[in-house]
Image 1 (cartoon, helix red, strand yellow):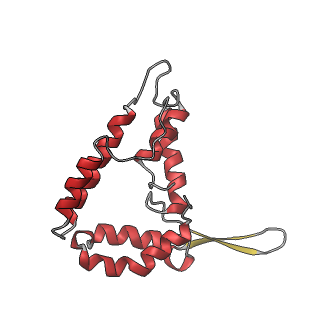
Image 2 (cartoon, rainbow, N blue to C red):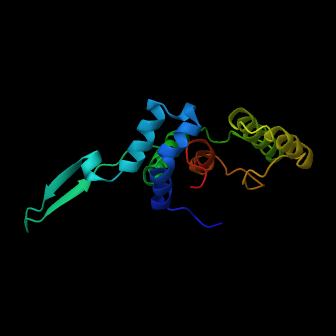
Length: 172
């Protein structure tokens, strides 16, 4: 699978966000607009502000643009995810088994939530037939891109594992 870089992600929103909102009015609200606008302006000193430093030796001036610090932004999400993982890792007790969710259950839960979201948000009457077929054709659920096997042992390994699915964008 080809990875999506932060500029591609931003470009998609820059080019299509305004056209997307009329077809999905629930996303046309101040919370979503603020989040998307912050992500689009991340790292732009004219939109987000900046701090300026001058080297005491050579006098060179350097401007550092502020970031949006949003978990929705590909530039900032990595930092956000790492901080969340560190926060959780400090609270895990050694020797305790945490967070084991059977792999098969994750497939069924992913299928349920995805098909429910489609049923609620797609107005095409043909979607019902497609959803019914998806349940029939995939009785074990949809692939959720999880790795089958052991969950990493406690501490930071477990927290990083959880952060991939709880606080980060799906393609990080």
